[in-house]
Image (cartoon, rainbow, N blue to C red; front, side):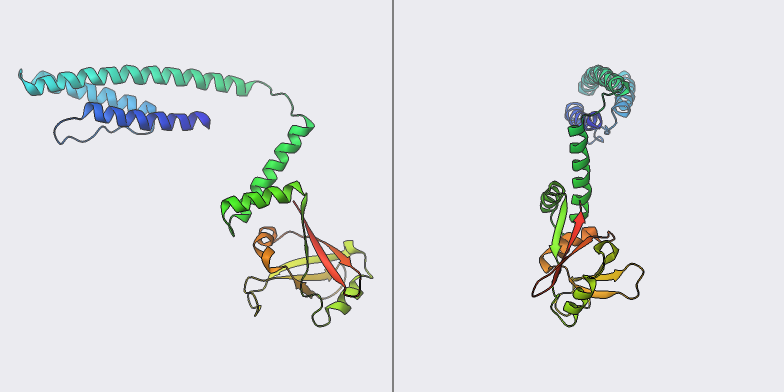
Length: 245
């Protein structure tokens, strides 16, 4: 990929320089160089043939001198482009040779770093749909470094939810399935995400509460995943859910 970008940068720069050098008079169409270096070389050779033909048909005078200069400039551009192609071909050959060599297996630390980077990039891309790219990747790295993110469930004191939490506490937490469901009809927040639970093997789904409003943009990146739940005993029962990185 690095070589491809270098091709583009060099081609664009050289095409501009050749255009200014070759087309200084008249209303002729500017040099038709593109981003492909081989196509540029072909275009230069076509131009050389055309200038040579036009030069031969012109009587001695200013126009003939102009075409003579264009021929000389084009020949120089052809030589430079051929040298550039040869240089890039050598770099590509060296790159392909290095890539074909059996690489050393990464160390455990390197493998872990690559896995973390991959996870952070994937999460950052998902988070960027709801926030700026910089904020998304900063948040993604923090989540990955912490091994995930744990959030409280809000609204657990509303209605009969305290009784529901007391009932849930009699089950093995691993048998409690958590579902995250966007709730656009929520009167307090159209971006709300409801936390619904069901017991494996049981019947019905119960709305336990909601994701904290400040974290809904983050949690949208985890929609479709199944978080773990941790029940909290106390005078007011509560619950926290955890998403793996």
